Length: 516
Image (tube, rainbow, N blue to C red; front, side):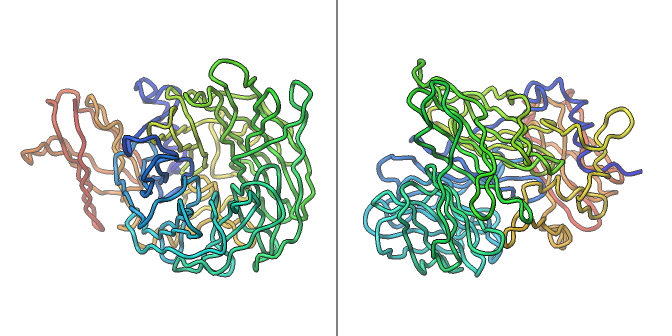
């Protein structure tokens, strides 16, 4: 009987726990984009293995470049990285990029540093530029979040130069069609499609709903429990929205600040704007050395569907700190234990997704010095899920989960897209229409001491062949039916560069790796 993709990864994880970079099923990686400080804290799942992250220089002079990079399921930046220079200087780029379906790739938006203009960039699936635009606006805008529009194109949120919530609608070519502001104070960090039409927008203790044409439907204020010193959380930021299916509303997460404390929060709203519940996940005293904070908080669906995994980072405001997570019940906000995620690299900004069978976080390492990636293959598997004998997760029988050809769709893409506010899992039959379009090899670790693991969706019966730089065949193995991970022991080989080739009936792929 074939093992499905997630089960294979879990079994392999159990066998390679001794690798130093795999302690407690945790992978981490960083990448230097440029010598200046930078900000990056939004990621998107790309294909069956990889993720992309985007950012820019963060309040530095001559800030005219957007950076986008791919990292693997092992949190390694070992693939492509792009730099796109705008025709004029930009404001700080927060998290205003999203997936694009036509053309397939990514769309990004950033306000210009001077003048009432906006810069938009459309890229393909590997970050290469399709086109860029500069559009005029009726007033100065800074942008925080963007999503695909229900009537085509995109819609982005932020604030105007008076500090009020504002949105801009773009067509499919990235040209601004209209911009509106609202008599609600704050900065818009996140915008998502709402069930029944229109959008919900969150920013600085305010939540609003607008129609497709931008007209205001309702505006609400987020109410949180009191701070440990008894004062109110008067300011919030870094809000993120997670739409729920049907009439269940949406989850709102973010960072909250009172007179003396900072806390990460999770709340639930109905589509009509009723606050169902609100919880503080963890607080820290901001008067302590380094000004510790709990911030950059968002949530992803757990496997069971009746809980969310809410994540944040805890630590000094500039130096960064530890990643934290907690299971929260969607119905009533009941909280599980706060758990550390075991990161060795201090994290400044972070954004989580749940895809490809693992919890993945991307952002910025402490002191804004590098792009950061984190992957955890086993964290927070819900014990209420059906189990096989011996306690192993029975992924074939998770309720309400579509599967295709034995592969668990919602574990591969468990941070789903939404259409008219309703959950919409990607159709893997579309993704798999062209094998060469999605097939890839990931080699970990790379560089390696000699023990390597080759992962990915591989053609049964294909040959994996390892060659040295002279072209000499060192070792070969055939891909067993149903496998997505094959290991090679090359510890007796000399240091240097090698290549691995996957040769099958349908395609031929070669990747390089290093033994050191």
